[in-house]
Length: 54
Ligand SMILES: [Zn+2]
Image 1 (cartoon, rainbow, N blue to C red):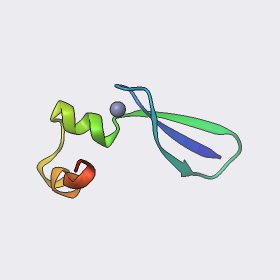
Image 2: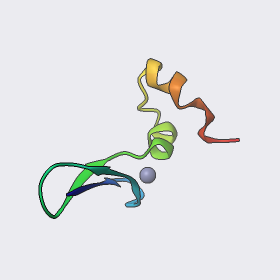
Image 3: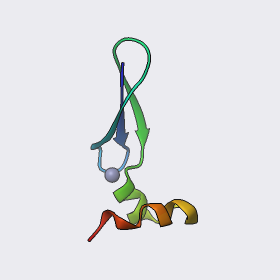
Image 4: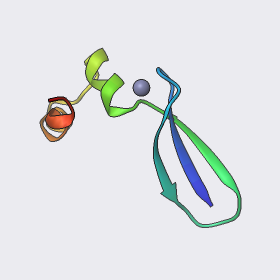
């Protein structure tokens, strides 16, 4: 199956992950862009995601 990670903020699919089983799944989450804009980043992940913007 495929798990679609859908941003609960901008409602865009920002990631698709293959998982075991049939069908589709949805995961409500925050995309990296919105996470950054809302400042919810952990300090460690902020370092890893610093380069999404030019
Ligand atoms: Zn978003």
